[in-house]
Image 1 (cartoon, chains in turn brown, green):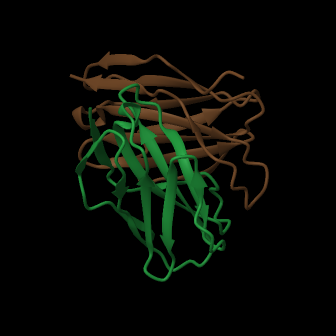
Image 2 (cartoon, each protein chain N blue to C red):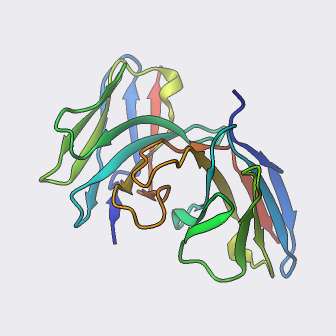
Image 3 (cartoon, chains in turn purple, orange):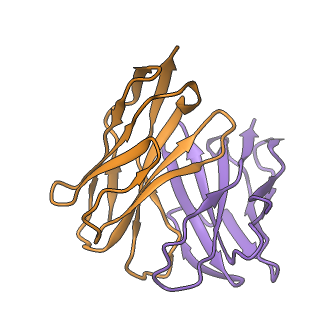
Length: 116
Length: 118
């Protein structure tokens, strides 16, 4: 079974631009969540989607948004990029079937975004 | 809000020896899950082991085991017979078992870089 696939692996953008990152979950997984990883702040939760609905959002500005499609694939968008948005963005998928699901998160290899 | 603390930024272990990575957390909840993830240079976060808070028995996965002390809010990872491939960054993480609308939200510690000496 294929793992979580994130594209692209590397991305270089300039300040003020916008960027879209893509995540394809493991087949059968309906929950997709996004995390930002930086040396200073560590790993921070961005948001989670289940069945095309955002279930929760972390403490990030409105420039960060996402969506999920009917096939569970998810995209994350960052508008008006700032230098501080440079980070590794990780996507994770899980079955997410029950309210108390403890199905583990499976992570992708991440997208390394550099903002210049 | 829950917090996870990994106070040691780096550790080193001799190949074949045993090493223990420390983690403490703070929560007011009684039902939750704890995880250790490994992140090698490939960047992919790999689940090493998980513990359910209501289970008193410590989880084990081959060479990896945990010491879960619920009252002390401590969750350490022991790696036995360390191998070169164990070198990576290790993250301790917390997830609530109470439905808050986000089953997949993990709260991570800052991580610890483990090096293995041949």
